Length: 425
Image (cartoon, rainbow, N blue to C red; front, side, top):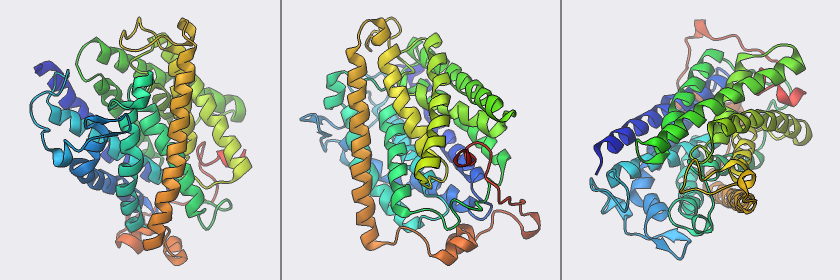
């Protein structure tokens, strides 16, 4: 047991929790219409509380229990049995804090998916889907990548969740958006994001929390955590600069919404690489991420007309794919001896291994999400009734209003800046 490492992990876990609720909830809540703020936040909160219980009862042991043929974890930790204050394996922190840290990863991954179906998915369907998805999709991928499974044994690198968190959530979000269908007004006369201030506070909370997300993935308070912390911050900065530059050159005006979105794109892309690449490499990873996400969203919106409400696939799916491949390009054993050398350091095969990781995550997300939503739809309608959607889910599902009637934010019928506008390009 190392008290310094334990302290760092306790702090990192708390930071990640803040990143999730209220961070993600505010980030998503600010982007939807004023009639759906609370319902959108409820998706995040319900993911936190429901997935946490599922994680304790059975999902953690499936992800991190003793390896069974490289495919799944054994049931040794069912109900957190044997998960206590003593370190596990080579870790220098209590097994319990590792398990809770990973619990937060699982919960926020589920919550990210909700952004694609916001303003129309039924809460009861969402809760049932969350239970099934973290069990059938997230836990196996976490085991394969981090828990001693077959992808880990093949040498795949994912420091903090490029495949497990971002590709899984992004691709699953795209599938969910297609299966649930577009909002009634899509793509015409869409309401804009109702509160840029909430969005900004949420986005900066995410940036703050990402330091614990990636830095804490070192599982110790030493040099590796410092590397992950530095690369995360610099990649986010590069992503913000790149997105602002794209907007400036194409529209003549850089927007706050766009710059924050670029920061998030950079954070997504650096997640799998944070502990394996140099700070200089992180500039390229974060900057290129904004180009990939910006033009990827524009193409998808204009070509396929899929109503991914908050562009979850465009940011997390595409950003995660780029980040996973970039890890295979820029990884260096000089940065982390426990990692691998990537393409530019003489090991092109690492790109192929990363490509396999990406393919597995994409296929698992597509098949798993499709099947699970079909199962849920047998018992609960996936989307709310038309009249409920028109009234807004805050009132129709929760009987609450985010704002007093006299203080309702003005609602524009023009597309929102950057994220919402990309379909108009």
